[in-house]
Length: 163
Image (cartoon, rainbow, N blue to C red; front, side, top):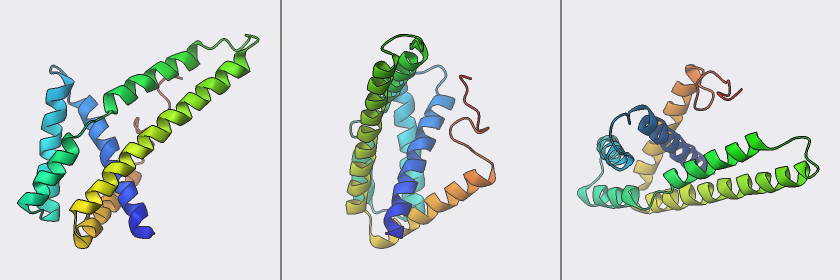
């Protein structure tokens, strides 16, 4: 159970890091090129750290190149936030609209979790037990490092940017 949780945490940390880096380094070129460069660097680091075979590298590359719903998810989340921001709190149907947006947010999160878990399961099929353990350790160290810096989500200061 602990091993599974660590792999989930590692996967989430990698996903968060990937999206943050993509946003931070993406000035001036399109999302596709930026994403591709980031994936290549990520594969290199992973290959070195886990001592992946050429076959494993090819499988991981294919998994990473698979359909990414990140942009669609980001756009859907932005739209959801816009709708929440635009809600009229004095409207007669405010609670019904709020409930509908909450359900929509739950569905979006559920889909994101399913996608991450599917990739995690596929990664488990590629890696050996020792490599999975090493990946989990790397994720644990990354989480400790982020906690040590006082990271609270994406913004690092614990404050929501929109308030």
